[in-house]
Image 1: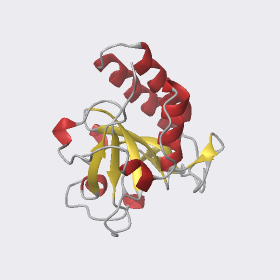
Image 2: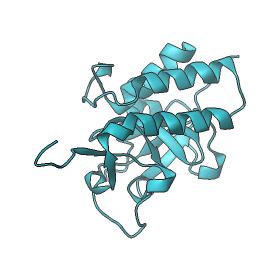
Image 3: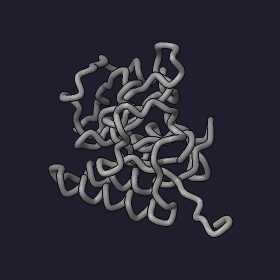
Length: 182
């Protein structure tokens, strides 16, 4: 707390989607108090878990995401002390399902056919964003459901955001499905 004001961090949830005309950097997305962040994120995951068909694999997958929530972002980081977006997706798949995927967002983008239709998204799909205007994915996350995805945000660490948020919807370049053996 500084000068009687709480330091805040942001979260993107369906109840916190900014005005579609709001065209500013990710850092300007509306924020909620940091003290509420973990509770809000876990509440979202609980609602997601209730909405999916139960399976042991999905439970393990969601547990891994929950374990990483609020982990700080660190470019090149690969663990709970600091992690970047592609290491987050890689670690969730490896630690929950023993599925190996490449290390970088650009390499992950190439593992399977890309589709751009958001209505085709399924739980666990990798979603990609062009965050550098260089026409290739510089950011990746994991689709959950109801247009929500988990990712390691460079400004917030591991959080859940909405694909409908203007920042992400305007940068969405596609998704692909990771093949998981039954």
